[in-house]
Picture 1 (cartoon, one colour):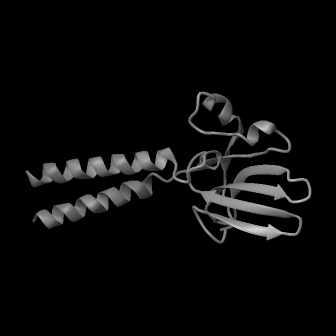
Picture 2: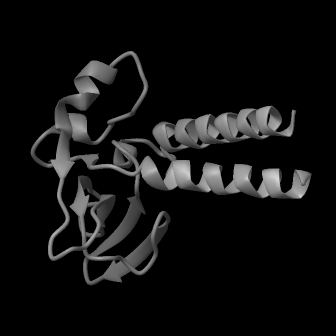
Picture 3: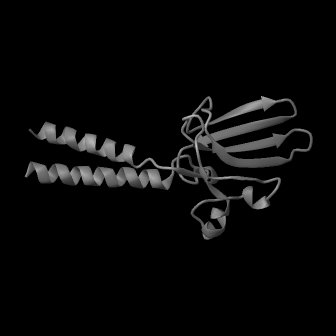
Length: 148
């Protein structure tokens, strides 16, 4: 009997994480046009100002949107440019980074799936962690109540 309750708790935790998915907001800026884009950090005393670049992302053709951060380093003058935006065409690697060595410049492209996640150095958003913790606590509480 306790195995059944435990399985229900796990299913509830997974379901709560799936249901928490909603529209995503990503930072949308280019450090060449606005220097604040280069040093954007989430959850700092500047958080209000950092939200100036957040925009709602919409997928196209039924594809799920995600956030992307691209760092471009030019070999000629050693300049660096950061572009943050929404994406919907799946990259080679999801929720991770990969590099592309092009003629005259190198790119590091990182993708992530949380609100504003392309502004922080981490790929796992605080909202995703919070939803996971809430789902786990609710599931364990429900399992304890059903067991008694």
